[in-house]
Image (cartoon, rainbow, N blue to C red; front, top):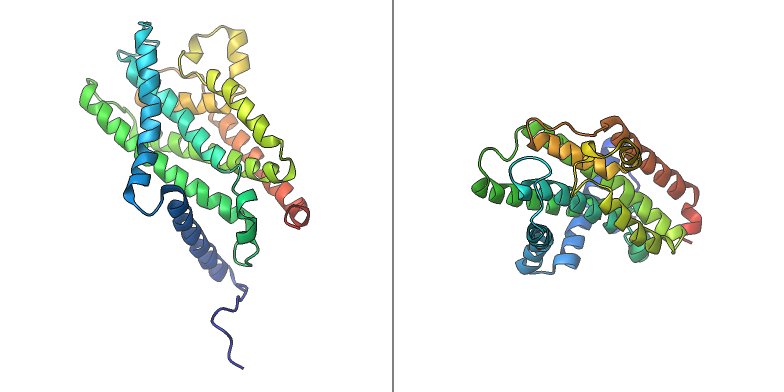
Length: 268
């Protein structure tokens, strides 16, 4: 009897499994893009305008305070480097919260795994924020004297590190939101202290030793410092790349272990 073209056949080799996973991710990313942005281009444009407006509002508020520039000659470059880094992390991490909960029906299909729906959201959000970075840095280069970025390779590595941190926290958020519904509220409350200890408005290296010890636990602060070290030539960051990558890896491993351990409980 001929096999139906709609019958799912489990991949038996690694290349087949990889090919299937990539196809699932592409399909889910396209689905997420239509769900989030709609079927017209205005939705995607709004996704780009929103973080730019977010940055612009803070710049206007901060500029009205007439404070001195913490580092460099231009306060807008200093603030944008910090705010856009935090925004990139937060946008990616927050997208994982409802990824599994809102796609339980989709996960019922054999080719779609719970982590696939998280990856689709992370990929879409990461690409969107990277476009925002390109637009923002291009606009800054037109208004700021000198080079906006002094080390492009280091900036690329820093943005990859931010995306990895966002992916790890997004995966953990997605799993915990299923196991512990209250987690969404806890995450919402935690974003404020993360924001104010990320070094967006101040120079972490200029803080007292006690304060440096406290904010050094915040991985987003290390992401901000990594980005700024690629923008400024003489910047001395309070940065530990091994801690940032280690924190991200541990968070991702915890999420994967929890998802694997409680899989049948979560999706039953």
